[in-house]
Length: 442
Ligand SMILES: Nc1nc2c(ncn2[C@@H]2O[C@H](COP(=O)(O)OP(=O)(O)O)[C@@H](O)[C@H]2O)c(=O)[nH]1
Ligand SMILES: Nc1ncnc2c1ncn2[C@@H]1O[C@H](COP(=O)(O)OP(=O)(O)O)[C@@H](O)[C@H]1O
Image (cartoon, rainbow, N blue to C red):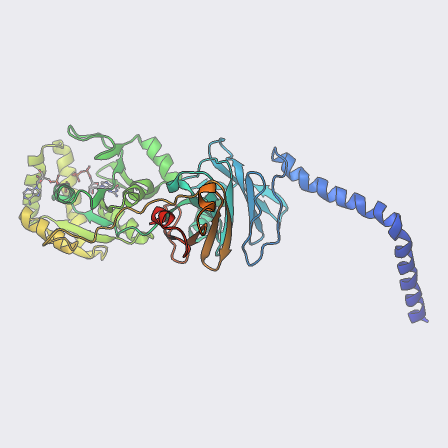
């Protein structure tokens, strides 16, 4: 009996639906769709703009649908929308996040160097944690960027800021040589040894110009020896994540900006950092793979004589530096931070030892890598992805004449990343590229 009534109910429902279908169903469904669209658009109008992209079903984490100036990518339950103006200004590409779990839009804290606003870009999701952006019609050095959405760095920064965080990183071809970190007490001869190295191998080494709040000495130039900075400005830059490391040394603030190290690597040179033991410890804990060298004085008495003979500090400053020197030498020798300890007794001998350690004594080194060139992309191209290769199909009239017009970016050995550059991009033309175009990429 109950079964009979249930069947009857199902039958009536089906009949009702069939009756509704022609007219009633349309009346029922249409407002639902309309309300959903209005709710969806409301997000956009509350952001001050109309939707300029469409969400697509991404296959295997790849495939973004650019429309107008914006692209979007899903990472976990968040949709990252890239394009339009930056939150603060119209100069940079903006980022906003739609959190599907809460149904809310979030403007994230944006770290790293941001790419400038552009006429358009393509975007591809890589490894479920970063989005590669290819900027149309930009300069060769400025066309590949990475927006880190869920990398280790972003996860750490999210905890630190207590907000949603994304981080930009510029893509660079090839890899950089290991930087050299040189530490030692004030007056031991670090600057002297570094100057000798830079003078003998000017095309090989570049100095990481630190920031400091100390006053310049008579012969020191801003931007060459240090970036002399106000404490408040430097503290803000540190908070904004612009420094690889920083420390309070002899009562002043010193720090290595990420840009200082990356600029040297960009020029194809090996970066030298003259930093104190605390700074060396921070670099050691960072993702920067470096060689760590500690310079020791022959005796404390000799150190004092060199400091006094240099004549750049007041008596009070000299005494402070000498007091700090003992602890620094102790740490330099026993902390395990430094892979190499050199004694600077005789300057020439110490310099020879330094060169040997860097593989530079004997004949002039020949293994100096040329500075990696940028990628020369035409302004019109389309992008696709196969495994670890991004294929860029060029559409310029010049390239249409070529037998093939594909550029491949190999992203299988990416290194580094935000807050510095993403290195290790490998770029090549596909096989039957004409010779002239192959040259462009070499
Ligand atoms: N942590 C850190 N230390 C630095 C930096 N730049 C310089 N120093 C160190 O600060 C100390 C004082 O440097 P400076 O005032 O130039 O005096 P000097 O070493 O006697 O010539 C030295 O031990 C430097 O190695 C930096 O960017 N970070
Ligand atoms: N081996 C050495 N013997 C004697 N004087 C030295 C030696 N090395 C460096 N000096 C001198 O010691 C002083 C301090 O050297 P500097 O390079 O300024 O030290 P740091 O950069 O470590 O503070 C300078 O006047 C320099 O010419």
